Length: 90
Image (cartoon, rainbow, N blue to C red; front, side):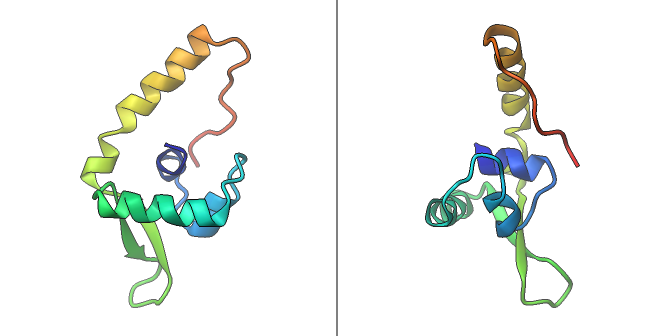
């Protein structure tokens, strides 16, 4: 869910995901991206037209998770003391 959250916040590159506050190790991040690709939740897209570097974006299937993440955020803010929103969309 962390990668999906980061995509919803406007991050698209591996480096941006690896710099998230949670500090996901790169080997785990690679595995998670591959799993999300395999299940059609994200897709690889060229960063620049015709370029060799790629980023990631949510597919329609992945975007449909937005309401779930918003509901989880609201639940945490309401019921779990000490919960805060430290990241906002860019």
